[in-house]
Amino acid sequence: MTPTRVAFAAILGKDLRAELRTLQSLPAMALFAVTTFVIFRFGLDRTALSGNLAAGVLWVTLLFAAILGINRLFVAEREEGGFDAIRLAPIDRTAVFAAKAAALLVYLVMLELIVVPVFAVFFLDSAAALAPLALVLLLADLGLAATGALISSMAVNSRARDLLAPLVLLPLAVPLSIAATGAIEPLLAVGGPGYERFGAWLTVLGLYDLIFLLVGYAVFDFLLED
Amino acid sequence: MSTAIELRGLRRNFGDVPVLDDIDVTLGTGESLVVLGPNGAGKTTLLRILATLLRPGGGEVRVLGARLPGDAWKARGRIGFLGHEPLLYRDLSGRENLRFHAKLHGLRGTEAERRIDTLLAAVGMERRAEQHVAELSAGMRQRLAVCRCVLHEPELLLLDEPDSNLDAEGRELARELIGPGERRTRVLVTHDPERALPDADQVLRLGAGGRVAVA
Image (cartoon, rainbow over all chains, first blue to last red; front, side):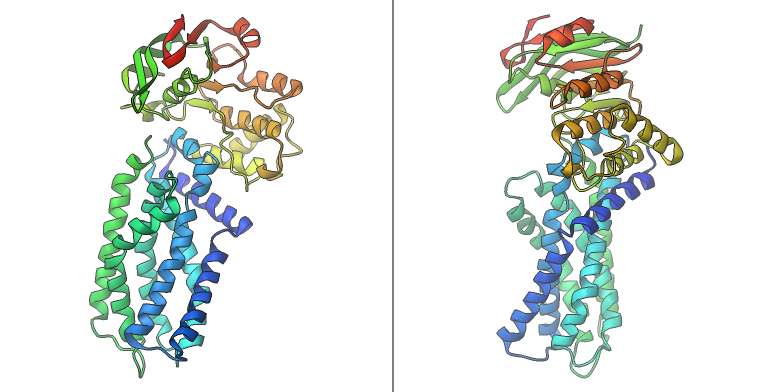
């Protein structure tokens, strides 16, 4: 058997190299998010947002932008025979899940490095919340990456994959969304960041991450079978 | 001589439609089996089952000593599969694709690079190795696919119309790598019996519904 870390690095490296070369996912995700912020700015007719409204606008925009990347996560495997190549190799298939989740995590972090500053310019009075916000988003991204890799692998073989991924993902992301917006809301409160129940929401996010990483580890082998 | 492939009463359906029905084959190590039959006879399905890519629907299947589907992991990595798709990523170069497959099969470093260089030279692709696969012709992709198939020095070659898209030169070069040879066990699906039959130790003719027409 090929060591799992070698297979993980090979698949992750291949995905990142292909994305750098083709720019098929990240630019679309970023453009979608920035456009959505513009629409919210004029739709709500507000130059500043705070509290739960700010948390909702930020999280929902990031979640929908993530779906664009999730939809494309396994497209090369399906259209160019990568699934067969991977199934022919003597590797632990959880390496595929881990590599795909890691690739999605990289896309999400890159997306946020681009669009969170845009959100701050559009809607926030100060940048004081950005550091703790980064911690919340990183934990939320980990859960979204695990869930997204799992759902994308299931949806990719369906003709209706563009519909199936969001329809299955969004209900699964409800607990993640509640915890993420719960943690973000006090950070974006009027008068500067607050930390009420911040630790509790981070714990919920961590538990969500752990559960879906374990689910992916447990079931991914079966998802690749015919 | 040890047995490389043993099929007893192999069946496979897609839905209610039988694709393979009661196939028996015993193939020794180093032998070549040529599979013939009309379109839809189940030739590709048979190859994909042997490659561990499809589960058998019934019967007993042993490949390289591993009982499928339960022990498929024991056979993976020892099989070279050349199907209708080249299994190459379009946005990577030929060399990057071969490096990727080498890593998946546990080949690394100078050993992998040496093997890749040797294979690229063997199929006349050393000058095109840095081009993206999307920019290559179908024949050149097939040459790379032949390299990918034998990169990890498999014990068993499963070849589904390996000459597709290859010109005369390509066919001759590929033959060195995937043609008959000592200790090279092969299952070859083809529509060109004139070329394949002289090298065959056994022939399996499939008819409609995957039944053995003539064994």
